[in-house]
View 1 (spheres, rainbow, N blue to C red):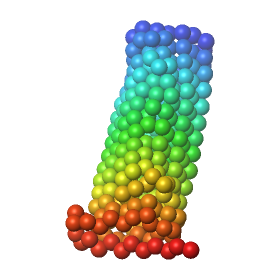
View 2 (view 1 turned 90 degrees about the horizontal axis):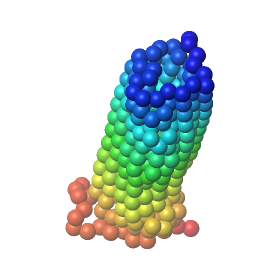
View 3 (view 1 turned 90 degrees about the vertical axis):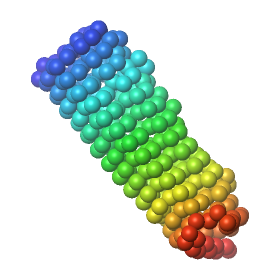
Length: 283
């Protein structure tokens, strides 16, 4: 393996089609496609300022590296990439990739990040300004994660999230086979049109959550005071601890509330079979 240390590069494709490289304290200045079509690249303490850094690459890692705000769209069409202890200030990272591992990274502008990807593991990461993060991305495992940004993980399949906080309006729309454990989910219109969503010991806030859902399951979840008009047109099996402000027009299943229900709205718009059983147990 060739080592490159304490050097600076710029312009277009300065390290194009290189293989078996160890980069240490290297700066890639503004330019394009600095490491395009490479393999077995391992970068440590590097700074990337140009666009399209790791395009069509395989088997690469970046540790203690910084992707500047000018390094937008730096990781596309690649496979088997790991970022550890990195700072990422650029949007639109990770497109059409497989085999992504993110550990202890901070994203300050994660807009339109992680699209059309597969086989993703995210551990101890924080993402901000993350509108439309995770769209059409499948087979994802997430733990100890904090997201600020709307429309998260829309149209995604086979996602597992643990011990996390999602501040995300319209999160999980049309998602499929998602399970979330011990997490906090804040934002309006949560998971509309989703299939096979399972929430375990989660706290949910925001208006009109969990509507138009198919095969929705809640186990020992809690609702915030603003969590109104829940479950409209959903097929649901739910156990909710504490109070629920309002429930509207669930389609079928069972909703068991271990607290008070502020309001149950069943009107002429309820969809068939209109057989959902709602029970409450108060002390």
